[in-house]
Image (tube, rainbow, N blue to C red; front, top):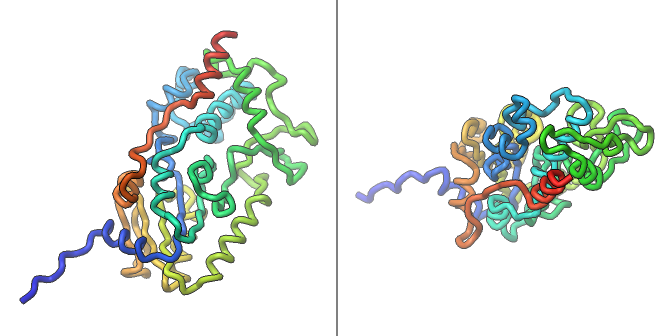
Length: 309
């Protein structure tokens, strides 16, 4: 009698799904960017990149979200944070591997990440939906207008004014205010009901139309690094899409929370591993290796400039 075929591993199953896919929808959460080298819980990286704030007893980037601070410290931190997370000019190997994995197949991205790493590594901006915002922009906290503005020149002025020993902005004129009404401003990211998302909505509408245009397509929903902090933003929508389109399949890559809905049966697979490990094994031969992340050249320049003042 012939021997039964050995069971297929989750990784082999996903590799087969990707080979046969007509379309790929990537749903990405914080776990993907952490695997790419920017981990908001990494205490060693925090001490290296934000030494003035580590000296104040703070330990990780996640602690800084929503932390009340005086304006000179608030903007000293967030200017450095955005420069580190959003504006590093170097390619990110993990995101480039993911782009190579998608290849020429029709695709879309839905991500809670506000770091721009998809568009900085080969994904077209009109195919990346970011409902939680973008660190590259800032807005009035009123808001007095639905307009948003480029944060880059503001960040540059702030970084030039930061005291490296204290982390504080030394020039009060560098602290930003609303260009229209003079009120407080903050980054254009979803923190509360004041968040302005008008400019992100068209991409979300295109994504919905893209799904509806080919309801019978062989679609792989690739859910990477989405956990339970804000599951309604990406994690649950990915499950709902897989349930709504019978020809689709859901693959969830998550070291700690890889569970998939039982209702999907063999149309879903879970991979309980780090995103970098899985993507590296799936990526075509010859693509980039494991991602690393260190302070960008601009950060080093700014620190030298500040030290010389």
